[in-house]
Image (cartoon, rainbow, N blue to C red; front, top):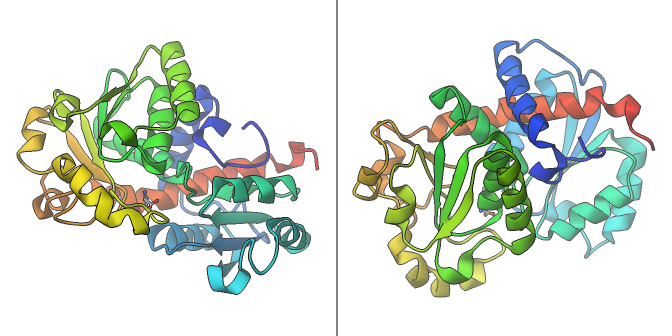
Amino acid sequence: MKGKDFLSVADLSSEEVLQMVQKAMAMKAEVSARPLEGKQFALLFEKPSLRTRVSFEVGIRQMGGQCVYLSKDDVGLGTREPEEDIARVLDRWVDGIIARVYSHRSLEILSKHTSIPVLNALSDMEHPCQAMADMLTIQEHKGSFDGLRVAFIGDGNNVACSLSLACASVGADFVLASPKDYQMPSPVLEEAKRRAAVNESSVDWVETPAEAVEGADVVYTDTWVSMGHEAEKAERLPIFKDYKVDESLVKGAKSDFVFMHDMPAYRGQEVSDGMIDHPRSVVFDQAENRLHAQKAILAELFSNISNISK
Ligand code: NVA
């Protein structure tokens, strides 16, 4: 790991992404390990959450730790108090902060003013814990990442950014199909392409979903309106209307493709009702794997903790 935190998939080297997937498989098989015995965590969430909150709370308890959940109204990150002060206060009490924020910058401020690990539980730029659970799910269903084609249909958002970095790290091809103005931001795209070049894979953009899905091993979609973009909903829905993943679109994928969605799923918008329960859908495996992947990340961060300079 690059430092004390996990804010981006890029905090792991390519090799470490693969190692983390292996560690998550081991954590899933061996549920009794308790590397967080006596550790305390703050879960600082500015946005709603089902999967992330519950999987972190359950995972921390399974590993012997404890946590305190703080919602937007409890804390007022950057409104009631500056992020810097919140960081410095929490640093005195807890051993780690797991934060879901509107602005990725808030995570960087929390990181800068703490000596303890800060984990990104979703920001406007990345959702790295989701990506690690997704890689675990792909590994389980496909057995290997070599030569896989992962097609992400819709918005070049936080989930797409983290997934592209993770795919590029393990040598899987990643292709985004999105409207022209909804591609991934340049810094992430450049890092993903840099990793892909080293690992002999590719990161591409196309405009039409059918082109992306052609021959795909994984077809992935996410909401067209991420948290924080609610005011753009009326503008976005018509722009994305041709990006729905349905039974007709996935006919272009390989016969043994898997369908993935990080959820919540907006049936009738980015995904048809039938795709969630499609025989090739693995969306509930993905949800379960949040638990195992995050336990691996926590175990790794806290096994390194003695090497981290304060
Ligand atoms: N892209 C979505 C992911 C939700 C888990 C969002 O940021 O709202």
